[in-house]
Image (cartoon, rainbow, N blue to C red; front, side, top):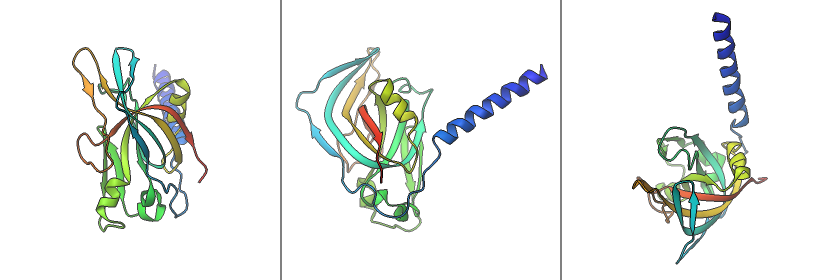
Length: 199
């Protein structure tokens, strides 16, 4: 019995080590990696998509190339089956290693947090050049790509900002702005394409 417990522990440790290795951070040299802000086209009349018992209403088309500042995977909250991964993404000077060295970034409970001792760039620029995106993979290929995204990596993403709802009254709304902060400021994204980009 003890041998089986040890074997199970070794398997769990190995699985965890493999996951860390696949998602280990990259450390690109200083310099802006993603110069352009996201391109967003709001939709007057969006489409309706069905994901199991969840209805998605498209609100805008979005395309961006950004640096992955952080990632967090979710398994147990109400949105985990729909959007299992959040990516904190940055562009402009929020994609520059030299700037990010002075910003502590983390994610928890579907929020993206940052902290500085001294501002390397203005606060407003930090807030408008980074975001937290809840990612809904459109298919298994996108799900695989999201699973292998690494912090520090440059990625290109395209899809739709969506609102989600279920018959039991549960709902999840997307932000449509880059300048909002706090609760409700994250984007809920139906991802049709996600791929790494060479710096």
